[in-house]
Image (cartoon, rainbow over all chains, first blue to last red; front, side):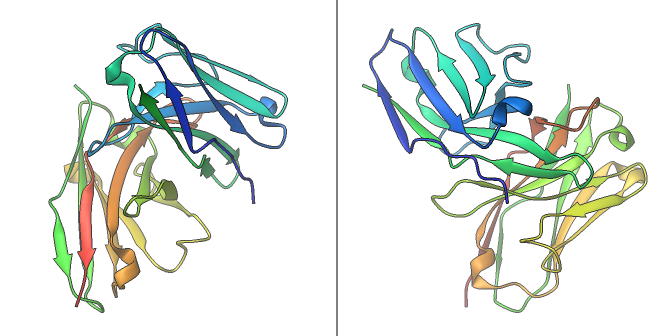
Length: 109
Length: 120
């Protein structure tokens, strides 16, 4: 089965840049989506199709995807960005099989 | 406003049955896949499966095949997740989410989740 690997945690100072990676075999050939989940809340889509943002998501959130690694970048990090972040891909279009990454806890120092 | 409103928290005993709901509003319910996602205590997100309300086409993750059943009622724009015999290991938060229209590739709107606790 397809596995998406993320670092368990990333720490960043306010105002700095956080980069969260999502590794998978030839992930660059798939569309990658990212969700933010704050404690006690449901996930929220923050980036879709590698680098597009839903309305209402700040431009500080951006994404890229190439080779075996997709990356979510959070610029000018704020305290409110502290959350768990998950990547996700559609692994099989015929079977509608979806895979989530292992999740990364972003801590704002 | 597009919304998914999930039913309230449940406390059940092992072996009991359960059906939780997810009521959609603000969009065409029959035109978008609905997914179900499990989050066990302190753990990550797991895709359980998806259902297309338009024709009830259903796909289950191999990990959940035979363990749960999805259904919908188009007349009230509601999706359901049910168990016939709960186990303690079913204790988790269950989210429903609406997929994007074009490719059903990502989940753009989520319900707030239903907490299910199974304990004797």
